[in-house]
Structure formats: C-alpha cells, structure tokens
Figure 1 (spheres, rainbow over the protein chains, first blue to last red):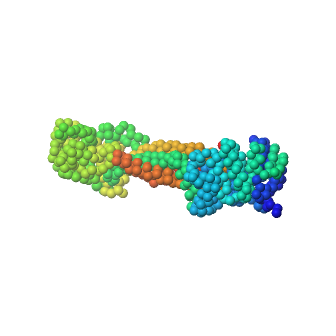
Figure 2: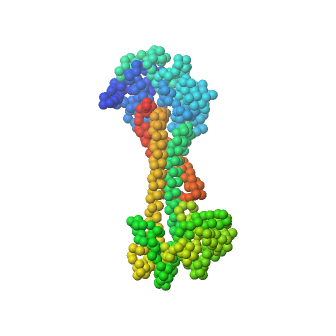
Figure 3: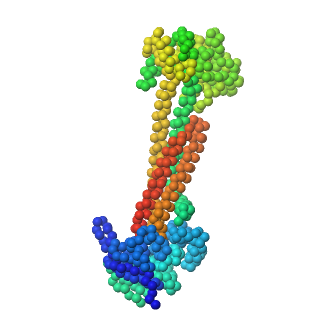
Length: 229
Length: 400
C-alpha cells in the first residue's frame, strides 16, 4: 500500500529582506512527507531549516512555489484559513516551550481547543486526558514557572496533540533541556510515532536527528541529502 | 466563536496579569477622579458666590461712591472712597416711585463686639428698617430694627445667626442680652435666620445690623456709604438704575458715584471665578495627562510579552480577528471599570469635601475625563494588538 502523502513542498523559495539586502533563506526546495513518517530536518544554524519548518507549519508563506497539505494548496489561502489549518491539522512544539505565563498547565493545553470552538466541558475533558498521557495528571493547575523544563515541554506537547493534528512539528524541542529530560521527550516522540503520529523534527544535532526514520540535511537553503533508514 | 468565549479569554487574561491590569486601571482612576474633584471645587465656588449674591435680592441696584468701572478694574477702591451721598438723596429716591420701589442707605464697617468675655470681629452695618425687605433678611428670634429705632438712634442690634451663636451659644439666648461696640452698650433686638453657606468670602451670617443713625454717630460719620435701590420687579431694574443716576446727577458729578446692577456685579465675579475653574481644570488636565502617560507606559512595557503571546495564540490557530477582539474587550473592560471607579472616587471625594467647602460635580467633567481616559486606554491597549496581529506568527514569536 502506498502511504498517503500528507504534505508536499514543491520548488519553494523564501526570501527575507534585511536592511535593504535580500537574503534567500530557502532556495527551490522540494519535499514530500507521508503519513506516519518521523523525519528529522538537520542543518547548521542559518541553513534555512527553521524557515522550512515554519512553511510546513503554515506559520509563514513561501515567496515562490507551492505547498499542499492533505491535497489542499495552502500557499494561496487566506490568513484566516491558514489559522484554521494550524488549529486543526498541525501541532507545534517550540524550543522555548512558548507557554502562556501565569496560566495553568490545563488552561495552556485547552488554548487550541478554544479557537477550535469547543465547549468548556469537552475542552477540559480532552485537556486533562492529554496531560495524563504526558504524565502530568498531578500538575494540572501548576503555572509554567512551577514546572521543570522537561515538564513544561511535556505541557507544550500535550497542547500540540490535544487537537489530534495530522502532523507534529518540533523545532529543537530538546534545545533548552538537560540530557535526561531531553531523552524523555525524544522517547515520547518515538512512542507517538509508533502509535501513528507523523512527526517532523528540526535540529542541528546529528545525535538527535538519528532518532528519526528519515533524515533530511539542509544547507544554505537547499536540501543536501534525504536518507531513509 | 461567540462573544462569550472572547469575554472569557479577555477576563482570564486580565485576572492572570493582575498587576498589569491594576496599574493600567490606576492611571484611569487617578485621571478621572482628579478631574471630577477639582472641577467640582471650581463649580462649587461659582455656585456658592452666585447664591450669596442672589440672597441679596435680584432686583437690587447698588449705588457706590466714586467711579467704578468693572471692565477696567476699580480706580480707587469704592468702599474707601469718600462718600458724597446725603440722606436727602435717599428720601428723594423713595419719593420718586415709578420703577423704584424703595431705597435704603447703608454704612458698613468692621468692628469688635464684646459680650460675657467673648469677642468677635464682624462686619457692622448701619441700616434703615427697610433694608430687611430689600435684602430678604428674616428674623428667627426677636424683631428687626424698627423705624422708631432709626428715628431715635436707639442702641439696638440685630445679629447674624453665626455671630449670635459665637457670642451667646444659641440664637434664642441672645435676645435682650447686652453687648458692647467700643464700650458703648447695645441690646440685642433680634437674630436673623441663617442664609447658609460655608466659610468662603464674606459670610452673610456673620453680619450684624444697627440703626443707621446710631451707626453714623458711633463711627463719627455723616454720610451713608452705599445706597441700595430696589426696583419694583426684575424687568424694571435697568429703568430704576437710570432713574437713580438721573436723580443723583442733579446734585453730584458723574464721577462721584457709580450705579451698579446686580447682574453686572455677578458677571464680573463669575468671570473671575470662571478663571479659577479653568485653572483648576488645567491642573486636573495635567493629572489626566499623567494618568494617560501611565496607561501608555504599562501598555508599551507589556508589548514584548503580549507580542509573544499573540504569536503563540496565532500559532495554535487563533484567527486574526480573535486576537483583536480579545484585546479590544480587555481594553474596554479596563477602561470601563477604571473609569467607573474613578467617577465613584471623584464624586465621593467631592461629597466629603463638601463638609468644608461647597462642591458641585458637573456632568461635563465626568464625560470629558472618562472619555479621554477610555480613549487612551483603548488606543494603547489595542494598537500593539493590531500591529502584532498583522505580524506573521513566527515574527511575533521571535519578537524582542
């Protein structure tokens, strides 16, 4: 059976303008992601790997080229529709966790569901369930400042997964963690992938990239190699 | 998403960031309360003085010695000008009739009353019996000065209610008591009803009245210093004023006297008080501005944090309008709550202050200060949101 192609990036370029100088972050990149894959995008800083992830995550739009998600061309749709795609189909995990301060773990996880228009009761049930899955049942009402880095990242993963997205995007998810908590997060990704989640992980660290089943190396805005294990 | 969800988002955000919310509201509260309070003082002052003048009787024309030009200021103070009025002038004015109902001569000086070891310094006014009608003065206890008192230069005195209380404790106990003015004994014939009013300026309730003839002798004068002329009604005031002028000009020169209508006096005084109100308003405007800058400050300081928050909300799927509506509701709630607290504080402050001086909370000060603060609050609350909502989510997340 041919796996369903979830995401297709074709001939995409992205340029930024910095102090009158045009800077090409991505240059004619083509990439296909199938359902159930665990892909690592690796490259040194400034290689364009984060830009690629932002494009895949509908956080940014390409200068040239097309991007389609689940068969829908997302390089042409409105901001509003992009927001809906992000809300329903994509889960993000950031290096900085990006949790709302002074907001409980539970409320942080509920946030995407609010924008999905889910009622309060259902929201809470789902968020509690998801925090239980990441092992934080006893930390529901804790603020981010009362949690360790590893715990904060697990809250962020619960937030990313609570909408049951088609793809999980992680940008250096272990970058701000000690090696033990980093290991726990990577194990969690492995488990998630085994249970069918599609994961795209961006990193500069080859040891972390080796966790994935497919490694895409990127340098100076172009794909250098694309290897499956 | 329905509006209830937006409200919940906004209120959650406000209560999660209590310090920021309180500081923002504080700017609005201080601005609104200070404007309301200061303007209420100015307006109260105006109302107080207007009332005091109205209590003199609105149909009254004042004849003062010397030339007084209200527009250019006085050339020499009117009450220290040498009076050239004769009692004969008053008798003629009374005989004139027409627009003039009656005229009454007065002499006013400051003097010390002593009784039972107490002493007070008050305005002493020498009058005819008809002054009580012209100036709407009613006695509370005893009787007014009678025509016979004036004719026979009796040493009777009618006290203002406050002076009576200061000397004898109550109004009732003053009747038939004796007091002295420069060692000359007077009998208290009556005490006037209180005209009210606080401690600002000349207090009508402090004034005391003795027969004009007695006063002229006591203070070694021969001429009344002021003539009050009462018109038959409000519409005849101008006519009464010109008749008075015409009559006096037969004997006196033009710059020997000035005829003033009450409304001229009032408008001059109101002009002056208006300046005070504007000055107070100016001070209030500064506090409003400082409050406004406080609001801007808090809002701008929190821009970085809020931009990150907006980036995150967008990343997890908030549509652009959701961000704007949330921030707008936050700003409106802060402005309304802060503004309302400010209005309450300002009004309560004005109420407390009214125990000491007359205050009057005016609607325009409420509307002006509230809308200014709300405007600043909403603009500076929403402006960063508009900017951040336009940013790509990723740019917002990286904002520093």
